[in-house]
Image (cartoon, rainbow, N blue to C red; front, side):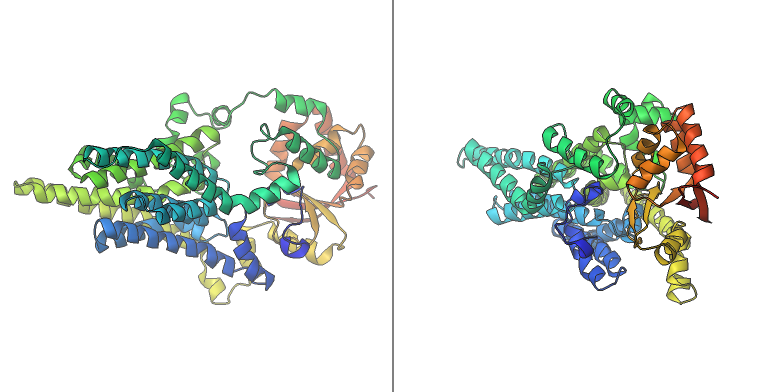
Length: 527
């Protein structure tokens, strides 16, 4: 849409168009030339860049073998493999977050040289400009900078060097924060200009006037405001994402409390109940072993392990308390956990070598080998299963067309092809529950179910429903049957549900059906 309408064209009906889009700018280059495969390679490249960061970081502190093992382990972690096959922005966020964290550690290790702090701030700003989750990285590292400096200065003071300068610590924190925000500022300026909220659509309560104005604009251009009944329902709702999990998934209090642990063991792709992704349990097991054997590490390594652990725990808990858990939303904790895994394995080996009793040494060395085999085997079986699921060979060999291959994974694509080729170019389609997958449409679409709910709740007849939709220019409906059915039951009372079903029977003609999706033409009268 940016290619068609211009990069700074405001799209109020698309909330995620206000998100920061550093990686999307990279994707626009090949898309401009009609290539939608290269963006996948760009996204995957950030996984490779992160693996290089991990390799470099671990190699300097351990050796090349552990560096290579860390890079291999990271690249084969299930969620990283899955993200590498898609065109999201999460791998970019992971790379820039890792760069910010590792550079900050380098700043402490290298006598607080300013270039490392600036590099960390630059990486943090790019992380924020890639995805709003980078704001968590910004908050954490902004707090880390003065604390880490004071801690290091205290050590120097104990060694007879200059005393701690609290103002200097605060100054370093300001340098980091300002530097990060400067890099992120183009996206804040754009959103401030468009909505009055620099991080729209987040924190509408802080920027309430701007948010209300923007929502009013969207409502006026998409069919009016929400009914008062619906507004009160949401305004008075005290449901948290924890309450939703309890109600929808039937989870107990202990199951909810243990989510930060469960994510390492129970992840399942495309299943929100199981966090819509998969990690590796050794990302938790091996770092925990450092609690037992971490005292054998040197002071520098032990301090770094605390930084990596604190960052990972704080980030994980922030997401846990803020929103319903998804694996890819905690991606920035993966690189530090991988580094901790390598430190743990190296520590096991070092402990084994320190034992004079041969069987104790052999036991610890054996444990380390078993851990390495097990963690890589866990990843390998996922990679094999995903490869079988994706099955790219027929497409690569030319046995399956691009359209048929896409339809395998996006059943609605068959109907989208029909829309693009058969419907008039002035047609407007209201899409219900197709996700945010709007890339393949060549026709104007809406995909907010609230449009239909408002059209029904504001009507007292099927003709009025048709008029409400017609006022928006909507000519067709594309729906996912199962989710639409459940949404109708949750959203409407008995009277309006019956009215909507009557409207579908008398004013909507099904002109296509495929893979659980249906396409309907809306008629003033149905013959």
